[in-house]
Image 1 (cartoon, helix red, strand yellow):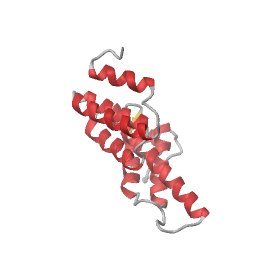
Image 2: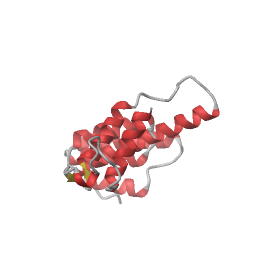
Image 3: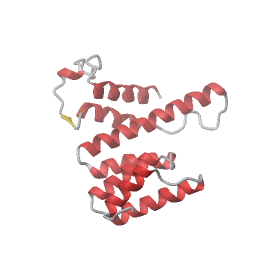
Image 4: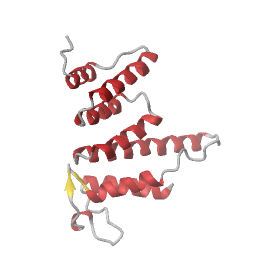
Length: 168
């Protein structure tokens, strides 16, 4: 757990350009000479990816108690934040497959996250896969209808733009 948190925090610090975020060799983020693409350094992306690898699921699954449940929820939210950062960083690099991996992993645990569905649709649109854009939109629409709501207006506009038709 602590290794996951350490790598997640290190990725955040490196993404912010925090000079106090030292790599394992002791040099600061600004001195490491790593490439920066899409506003996020390679070292930040590496740290987040390592955090993703280290996450092993809900903390102490099967155990109850307010403190455990609070920490479990906190770590899970952190995990989802790391995945979003990874997806966004890969998107900025034009690495669609890797971005999709991160975004779709979020949707396993948080299927109602409209913004993540939109991120997935954007990746499919980049690939020219309108069929997959449509499928993702229909999946989102079905999930939201369970809650008695429709996709937001901005989501609907983006979807219609990707599909090449006027929303009316």
